[in-house]
Amino acid sequence: MRSTTIPALTALTLAACVFGYRGEAEVTATYPLTGVDAVRIDLGPSPLIVTGDPMATGLELTGAWTSIGGNPKTARDNATTPDLVWSRDGRFAELRADIPLALRGQVDFEADEIRSPPDRDLELVTGLGDVHVVGVAGNLSVDVGAGHIEIDGGENGIAAVTGSGNLYIVSTGNIDARTGDGDATIAQDGQGGNDVIVTAHGDIEVALRADANLDLRLRGREIRVQTRTVSTVQGGTFERSVGSGNVKIWLDAGPGNVRVELVEEPG
Picture 1 (cartoon, helix red, strand yellow):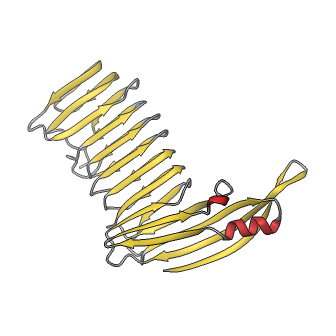
Picture 2 (picture 1 turned 30 degrees about the vertical axis):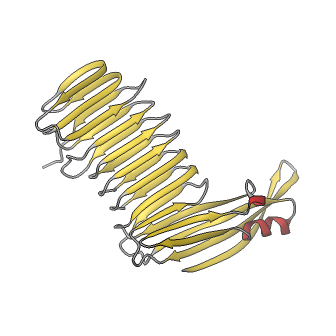
Picture 3 (picture 1 turned 30 degrees about the horizontal axis):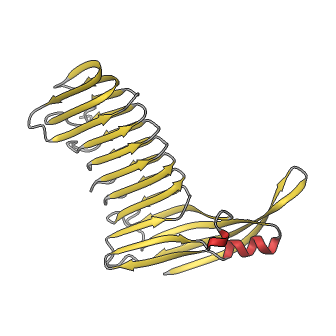
């Protein structure tokens, strides 16, 4: 593992008086992925921007520890005390923020960007913050306490959940997603034919690439389906099997609306 930590210090003011001091320690690190198939990333309550990059030499991360303190030295010490811990168990690895108990609530890690080879499976965890993932072809598991989730990729499958926030997902893989409070916009990519299972407390919109073998199980205040094989507008619940019925389109919008339409690739 190669890492560089650069401490910096800035003042935090409130009105005309000094409220406290802000410490910042920048982090640039690369963690080896040779022989690693899956990585769990838990950096605390931080937004995450993750890119699948064929040129990445490992798990590449940039970010900074930020802290507050009653004086410059305390703020500086608070920012440089925590650490990012990289551990490995066989073909599984984990990157987590390690903050001493006495500093919890005073120090956070703010990730700028994470880059990984596209074929690794990733598990992303954050208590608070939006998660954006693009170009990752491996399996994706995303667990957010509160924040939006935006994914373009996940060919080997996606499991995404947020307690509060919207979902935006485009994938050729099977999708299992849930939001406790928010809308979901989902699109099949490529040839389509992948399962889409979504539970939301808000509106759900799904764009299908194929409609030949659907197992439709829909629930919402208003349900609209417009494909070559199914067309309906109604409320409550709607179930229909098309062809072999082996592609699950199971959507539960609770009090929200459900819209399913066929959007074929041009040409």
